[in-house]
Length: 441
Image (cartoon, rainbow, N blue to C red; front, side, top):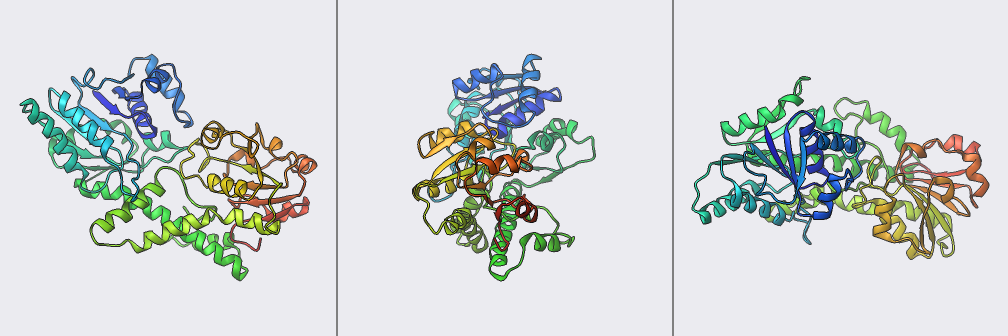
């Protein structure tokens, strides 16, 4: 079987590599020449645990290739995955120009039947636009070639994407023909041996499922952050509350952790897009509007705690920031709460000494490395002459540092825990002042 994957970002590269790993002949297409050449050398544009090994192994075995020329590789393809970006526009709506450009390129190049699978996150109804873009090019060529369009939204978690793709809890597919179903069944058969299943539905429902899933998870996060802030005012502890409600089987334990807000490429973009889709259909998404507003406010909570502790006198102080990526096990800085914190600290006159296990390069690209923001090689370097620690991303290596060593160089033994990963009682015994999210701190 031959599959084309257009786009070598997070979704495209994981999709292409994992399909190749089960024996599919995969060609990944990207218009970025440098990125494509780097991939041939095993240099990946993203950090995802285990992905580099899969890419290297399958490239060496010839099952995975990279190119900038779709037309040169499209012959004989059974399916084409569209995995290009749909960045938010000024109004929050998903920008379809890259998806539609790929669709046009497909229409200009196909010679035989192919199934075009939209894996990019696109608004409901986008399949009609994709189908029209392909048809318009076929008409311009005077060609009559059968093709189908399907929607196959991704549900990969950054940091666990390989496992999610190889052992999916479900595969959502929107189709409108039996022939398309046959192709999908063939592609995903190797991943269904453990009893997982494909959920077939109409295409608009598949497109909506992606937005609804991310919006629900974002809602849980914002709900818990809102409750956490109330806990601080009434003297409750959000960790106890989380345990209390998480044991209710109707609610469950996942995505009930209070913190400094969600970030990344999916939740912020998809919540905004779904709000905009509602507005376009005269249906305000009032709950999601609040979810988004709560999240934006939550990103400022850690700064406000730090500022209050120092009597709003941050000029000349140095804050050690632990964690820069929006979540652990990724270098993704999109919509990262650390960016909001660092901007607020430097605007108030403070200096920042920051460390992240994998996201420093991306952070330097976004923030620069200057007299206001200095990037360090480990947590111990960050605390040299620092006035406080701000934990933003809960990487495993931050969970049990040498607190005695840290106290030797930290000016003020105070920690602002933006992810509630530390034991406040134990830290108090170690001589630290502790502030978390949703407790009395």
